[in-house]
Image 1 (tube, one colour):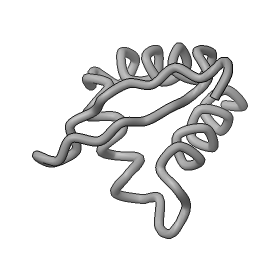
Image 2 (cartoon, helix red, strand yellow):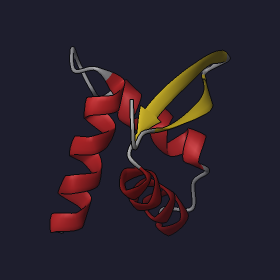
Image 3 (spheres, helix red, strand yellow):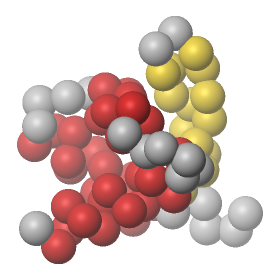
Length: 69
């Protein structure tokens, strides 16, 4: 997992860890701040709409979609 940064996130009372590249964490941090959410709140929102996609993949897709505008 070279280059990945792991963070622990509390999702609706359930602790989970998520490993993403630092660039994606920065994009998620910026998106959370822009939306007035904590990082955990943003990840909870992504989690609620991800369907069958793994959470890390859903976070990356969210960040890319947000960057595209």
